[in-house]
Image (cartoon, rainbow, N blue to C red):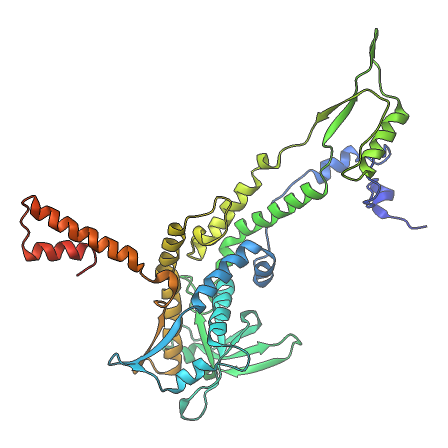
Length: 403
């Protein structure tokens, strides 16, 4: 005979099929006292990758930001401002590694930065300081060996001796300092290995997970949704329902399919007891937590799906704002750090260009209509006797971005 510890000692059944009430299996008062004590439950931010995989709101924001970063077109210029089309750096960008395009590389770096605020790239130095391999490494698999001379060194190679990469089979490989590009997003405190943004998102991420758990419990275990009460009366008052009929109705309710009807001889009335999910404010809590994530990564809510939706104008303006304030500075900072690591910063400039994106293109028809309206305004002002000298006209056009 199988013996279940929880059933034997606590009277709690783990059998999901036996759902109708069994009078011998109710929680004792002492059990309610123990299990009724609630303490906050926080996610483990040390498992940042698992949080990224499991929490859709976090993944959506980090992935969207990385996708927008990867949409850039890198262009190389010399110090005279002339575009360079023939250089080993461009060859590496066109073919960074055997399995990824440059857009894939930038996306991976964007995800790693979003999760860990630290990114590592294996780019071994060849002869003549040429590099033809550029492989992003998983940040959670890299150990930094510091020199211990943080305050006495002026160069990065004086701070870091080397890196150790540990693969999934726990095999370790030491990577020389000069062969690794190390990029960070500063946290304002740590010189090396800044703290991830996810550390500051522990509370909203915990609440999101708790909200999903709560919604799942409500869907899977709705509890008592109402009361079927007897309506028979006599001169002495209400007549209780026959115990056998009561048990039969209850078992029939739990065992029926959604389209089946309970048939009974008893005179009963239905009294609902369910609590509307919307009154629990679960979705409002989810929205507030998601906004905290958006703020942490410099994104806009208009770029993501919402119940109310957003107009095209709101989406376009938000897209442009995010590109200008978040995506382009972040990508350009990454390119500047790569050039500095390669020792090319004094002779070249690698620009992250986004002007080719359709959402950033000027609406030619709207622009023409606006110019026509302003021209008509100038004509109307002159007809009204407003005399504007050339400088005033230039000022008017300059305010409208024409001059």
